[in-house]
Image (cartoon, rainbow, N blue to C red; front, side, top):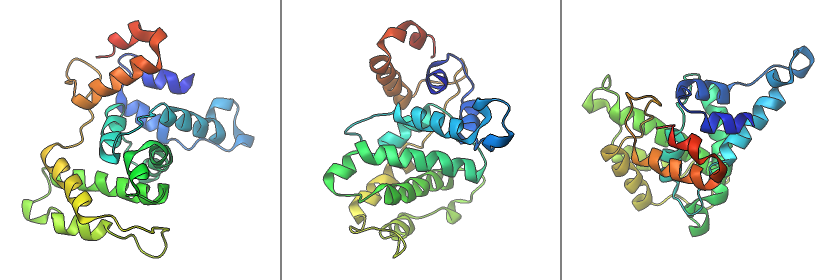
Length: 209
């Protein structure tokens, strides 16, 4: 019910959703309320992530829709927790698994993290153009993640170049939930997905954007 609230509540600040999802929680022995515990927070995160069952989408589109729903927190450990859960769910449903492009959730996690870093690198106005990651660097960094990762199939140059060009032209954005934000294609796709997932809550969904 908490995960559903975070997905559907009209006007809920997206940065607050991200902070809650990334929260580790407290040790059970010091919790006065079950909702403060680690297990509870982990279950909310997994339930929230599993509400994105976007079968047949590629990883980049899957990530775009996922990140349109909330804003990633600023703390690295919180981002890591969210992306681990996302990668496990995304790998189960994404097009790359069926096509044999990505071997497992660990590879998908590393690619996802790299995509987010590239998006920041390409579109952060504080980074000089000559300092931005090139397409060659992105391909080299992500073709093979090394012997510590169970990666049988290297990611192809063509596949990685398509990701780079897509991000260069269309950055990943998380728009606000209020009237100051615009409705992106990803937000509209997620809104349609929510309507199919929660048909009994159609009235609530129409007030979100």
